[in-house]
Image (cartoon, rainbow, N blue to C red; front, side, top):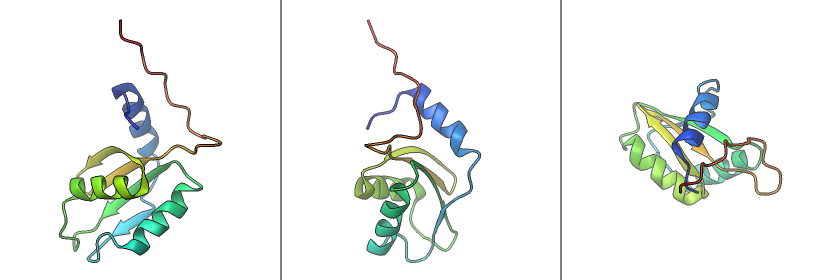
Length: 103
């Protein structure tokens, strides 16, 4: 899913008020981690992940890997925090601003 800058800014503002739901440590991304993230996305649309200092992987690369495996969208990576968005297909809770049409 491609987000406009307006939609991305809106999701960033929502994410600023939530605490990280997951911490990635030394084990980095495992199949169990992806399963847990998928379960989280079944109830929530916006996810914040904290990459701990003992994780040697780059947060930006981890964000892309996780987004690909969970079919979510990277909203932002700032420092060691990752914010991902995955709308609920049947009953979306977050209403994104409409994308403006280009002439």
